[in-house]
Structure formats: structure tokens, C-alpha cells
Image 1 (spheres, rainbow, N blue to C red):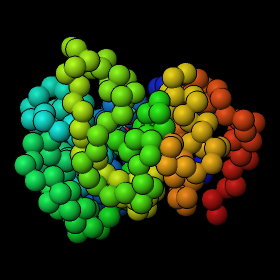
Image 2: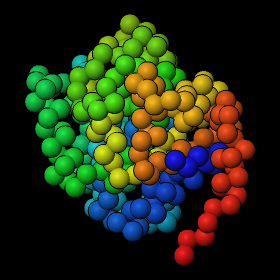
Image 3: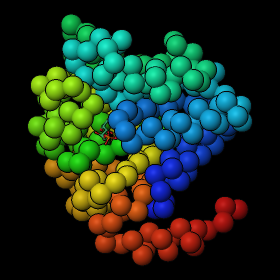
Length: 258
Ligand code: F6R
């Protein structure tokens, strides 16, 4: 695991976007795993800038989103379909047929989830998965107690997640209780993972995910088992790490690529 600590949210976002952009240049038909929420907004902003100002081409890219609320139609402003369109897809040239986001309105959750997993496989697997982290240590909507081998499925959101996400809704009661989410096992199959976190509210979860034991109580801790994870943090999110000196030392002494 590589931990990169930036001074600001913007710096964190730009550095993470550079990793995604570099991959797309090397592999124009890359398969990207996408996250929603407030954390990756800066990363998407920077990818849009790279597209508009520097010609980063998404014409062959395929995307799979991590999750979607159950019960929200695609055009509902709180849905993750809407979020992705607003903040990313309408600004870049990913073909609409290459965009996959779990359905919030399917009547057959099990069949949909099996199909979603199959589509990921058929598209060659995810090259790079973008992740945020919840204050309870979740990745995607894999709440504490989720199996670390879990696959895409219907999940009941934890109370903490509902409370945290109420800020996006008019009333707390409007937050859906269920979501379809990729599983931890699904995420761990991505070839590379980029996780971002900013702000003090994430500091404890980040420390437990990176430096604590691997446990289903902090599903992000499963990333310790993955061979290619880069974690991009701002100073606040990094503030409870025990090994800050080491993470910085590693960055200062990165071996030159031969
Ligand atoms: C969103 C997702 C969630 C968020 C997490 C953090 O697709 O999978 O795990 O990454 O809840 O959300 P924010 O970024 O809003 O703090």
C-alpha cells in the first residue's frame, strides 16, 4: 500500500486524477471503477479538465459504478446516476453504452447483481477502482460486518451512513435504506485501487483501514490484502495515522522507475 499525503483537497484530487489519466493514456480502453459522494468531486473535476484542456480521451473507456440507492429512478437528483451525469459523464466522451451503474429500480435484485458481475468480467475486469471511505470505514456500501468476500448485492445501509448522507437530502427520512453495491470481493478483483479521503471526519476510519487489523468491521481494511493500492489523503484525513513519518519518508525516497 502506498499512502500519499497532500496539503490540500485540491492537491489530493489532482494527484489521484493523474494516476487515472496516466492509465487511460497507456490503455485507452481502460475499465474504470467509479465512486460517488463528495470525496471524488475534485478528481472528476480534474479529469474533466484533462479532457477539455489536454485532450484526455475517454472514447474507448468503460466505467462501472460502485453503487446506487434502491428506489431512486435514474433522473432523480439524489440518485448516483444523476450525480455521475452531472459531475462527470456530461462533460467527457465516455460512450453511453459503456457506462454501467447499478439499477435503483430493478424488480429482480439478485438477477441484476449477477448480471452486473458478469458484465464486469465480460469487459475484462476493472483496471482501476476509485474509492472513497465512509466514516464507519465502509467502501462502496459495504457496511461494518459485510463479508470481505462479498459480491454485488442488495445491502441495508447502516444508520451512520444514512445520517452521514442525509446532508444530501431535504430530510433524513428521504435517505433510502437500501442500496445495490459491489461487494468487497468484487472490489478486490480490480487490478489497481485508488482510495481518497479528506477531512477530520474520516481520520479515524482511515487510520483503522490502513494501520488496523483486517476486519469486516472496517471493510476498507480489506484493501491491505490487495497488491496495488494507492491512498490519497489530505492532512486532516491523515491526522490519526501512527506511521505518518514513514509514509512521508517512503514518498521522499521513492525508487526511480528504471
Ligand atoms: C459512493 C460510495 C461510498 C462513499 C463514502 C464516502 O459511491 O461508494 O462508499 O465513497 O460513503 O462518501 P463521501 O465521499 O460523500 O464522504
